[in-house]
Image (tube, rainbow, N blue to C red):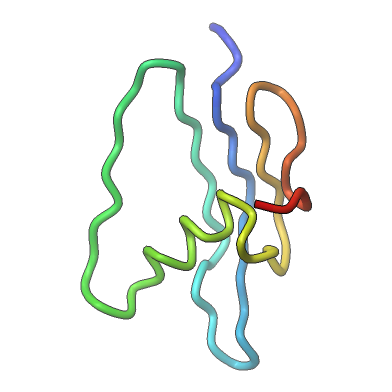
Length: 74
């Protein structure tokens, strides 16, 4: 099986006592489409902000095309 284009492993984002992303793991293959759904305040925007580098995760890793991009800026 080919390496996923996007590999997220154990992603966590905390704001003080609030946990916005809680141990999220996700693999997305090249050409796949996905949607992130949930009610207001569920952490959708926080997740996307971590994936694009606007927010640094509290823990976990984000790999894109095999490269660790966890701490790269937007």
